[in-house]
Image 1 (cartoon, rainbow, N blue to C red):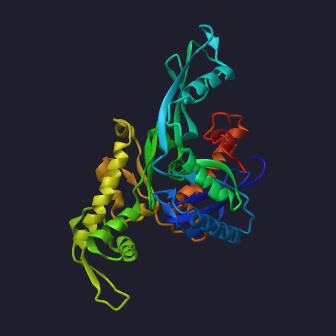
Image 2 (image 1 turned 45 degrees about the vertical axis):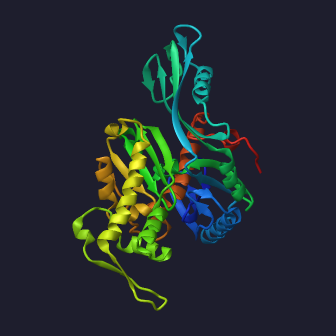
Image 3 (image 1 turned 180 degrees about the vertical axis):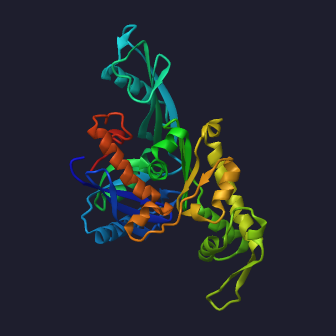
Length: 406
């Protein structure tokens, strides 16, 4: 890169709306300039339920980000999620014109188009097409097999698509601020850019991003995306479970979940009583710690099992690194132990930031998606500079979502 570039990642989550501003410098390093953040109102299970409230949240995050970073923000990279988003693998086969033909860009494009032509609901649109591998006469190639001789060329893609109108609603909300949307990225793909390095992806790794309203995941095997998806369950559901079972007010249930909960299953962590002070003058509420932990643990097990069920059969046996947890809910006590129990794999839990200043956002799992968008944009710019943009991690928004533009 000849000069530094400013990128802005926007995540409209169920719990918070976050706008991260980062500078990608000429030497390839990334500096986080700051983050604008506000509590989200009007999003349920990762999807917009109140358009005007969400637009207000985005505007507040924008104003804070501009104030903190002292920059004018005109364009963002938008993370989206929701159970309507689906990831599938598909392989396209193209027979070269003559036996022993040399593979050229035209042949690659033909194979790519065949691979990306999948059956999907009529109300869905392509969100992301990620090349996994190429195959030439049965031999795998990580990059394009240009110039090689062969008979049959195959392109293997991971294709992510989602409900057109739901994605449009997110775009409309941002554009009415007004801000341009330079690209749309499925949230766990962005989070993985912070959670994993190239070695992790090559050896095999599962990223699970547990947020307030959703749990997103992406599985990498042999350096490529093997599976991705969204479970419409997150930390808010745990708080609601505590509220329903114990009759503790929902706001208090959220606080006691964070301050007192433990999902490890360790009997020593479930001894005694949790006292919840009542600020209205009524008697304090008491909950058995065992009951509290059982409520939380039950919901988390269910969520992790749903993620597990969404993975291809036998794929976990190929994971050589382990499970990487991220998202705000991943910070709960005992989460790493329980995740290891469910997946029978090593678990890498995000650490609380120990450094001061905006660089702490790099290490805080609550900001992994927003900051990951910046890293994601950096990767795409590097690919484009290497003249490999046609099949890079994402195409321009106008090509992927050809419905309405500002």
